[in-house]
Length: 498
Image (cartoon, rainbow, N blue to C red; front, side):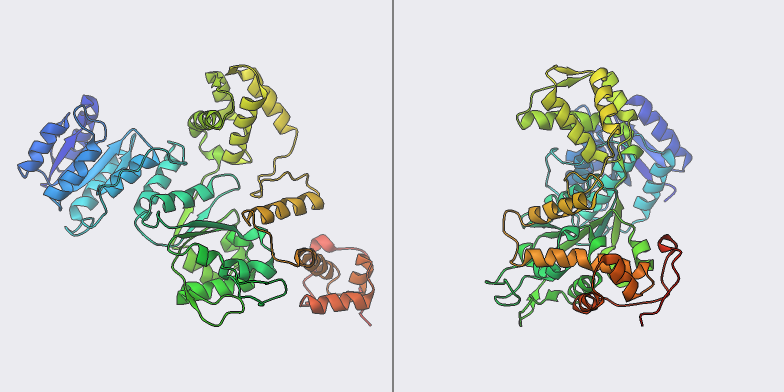
């Protein structure tokens, strides 16, 4: 529609001029105004083939115009632009019926491209979007960087859907916040949001945790217990660290996604699965697929829409907003009210954040709790950053301290496992399950180190050879020769098992 007319509303004359000239060069007629009243009168008169409006107009919020336009002229596309670059703005624009939301500043070519798409779209597209709901601004996702703006726009489009999503990103970037935002502002918001950390659940218990079990299904199952699918009925099930799910549990999950129903452990009657699945991982699932550790068919079932959460080092311009947010949150939780010097914020923006947003939040909490000064100075920040850099940062999702030792790692996983039960006691037999979890990788790696030679593996482990054989059988460990890697080389010649 080269002869189409664009109705443009922005109270900034210079912006109106720049956008008008760009649209005219693209072949469109433009009618521009600085207020909502004039724009609305044009719309009522039937003028224009598309509307481009800013959110902040002197006489009315541009977002409030969108549902009125959709009601009066359903086929008229509306593009909303705003310098208030928050998730709430993107959600409002999308749910009120805007064809597209553009955070300022944006590329002129992007605007022209959106206009072309909007004019080419059929009259039915977008007419069934939900309107009228106005979420509050208290959203957990903070940041105005281009990377976060793209996430906001993606989330706004996904709110009304039930598409499965995989959220990827380093530990501490806020992957669960993405899942919660999708739930809290989506059509399942009045139903439960249930999260489970796959890395914190022993493999022997994963099926029971996900699908529940009947009384007597296994040792310690003294009563019937619903699983996370049942707890999340009608709502959202967040599968955190999906990359750590054992391959046998992946097979069961895939079957549920394909058939839409599941069978509790020890049960006979299948149950319908009515949940939206949001999965998250800090691992590269495609690499795991190549390694045979993650099912490719499950990946494509889950990864309908991928969302990558950028690490904090890729969006340092968001750090001032994050600092203000965490200071306000700390005060709301009873910690002393603090101000912070601009130079101190700038220093935080230049720092490395291997633990990402979680690490920044913990630092702000520490600053508010430990320092008596009302204003956090650059010197205080420098001292804290120096102390932090002397100690390796482990951005583990378990949240516990990890000193790099095996014991520290085990403690972190066990803490996460207990936390995942939300105050409930784990099923009986925990000791045996934990020992089994440690024994399996220890024996598997020992066999790999000795190229499958059980005699040498038993000697290295300090076990009787028959004891090792029994453990291999009990743990159902496969023996494969010829897979020894370079890191296990030694000078001892190979010997047969005899």
